[in-house]
Amino acid sequence: MLNIILFGPPGSGKGTQSEFLREKYHLTYISTGQILREEIAAETEVGLQVKDLISKGNLVSDEIVAQIIEKRLSDNPNAAGFLFDGYPRTVRQAEILDDMMQKYHLGLAGVLSLEVPENLLIERMLERGKTSGRADDNIESIKHRFVEYDAKTKPVLDFYEKKGKLHAVNGVGSIPEIFERLCQAVENVP
Ligand code: B4P
Image (cartoon, rainbow, N blue to C red; front, top):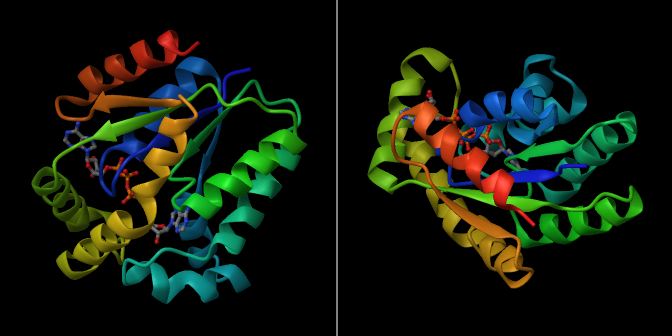
């Protein structure tokens, strides 16, 4: 069973590359960002709770995303593997995921970390903002997403580095080039 975390700063191409990875390796895809946007669009209780937070570029609470993840794990007992996109985003979330993976008898193959310089990330997200309709793809929210990323998400890298699970992948280049690098990393995980 292949369980992978796709990690990276906002706009690093996690969502873009996930589409190819899930298809190639037949993985069940869990994107907390996408699920939260669906909750907002459907105006569910969770959606109403997180709408403002997300539009301003804040992270949602660890408890809300834990519930989302647990539901997906328990709903998919026959998955060939899971691809986690944008989760975990705090050290607490990483600890919770560790516990949940034990509970569901899942092993973690590795964490693929997309590395892209900040100026390029901003450029990509502003470009996406022209058509995405995403409330957080504006310069103010983007800047705040980086503040959140540096303070809360970056320490997750250390968490997995210490476990020997971290694999850095150059996230600059064409989409197929980056996909090829990710596949090489997947095939080299022990
Ligand atoms: P996410 O949905 O995860 O969004 P993201 O980090 O902005 O983007 P991603 O890396 O997927 O970029 P994409 O492929 O689209 O999170 C949104 C929000 O949800 C968070 O800010 C937070 O509020 C909340 N949230 C989600 N998970 C959470 C959690 N676990 N805990 C708490 N809160 C959580 O790529 C970006 C753009 O670049 C696209 O337009 C794409 O076309 C382009 N692009 C991609 N690769 C490219 C390439 N190689 N060259 C040129 N352009 C490229």
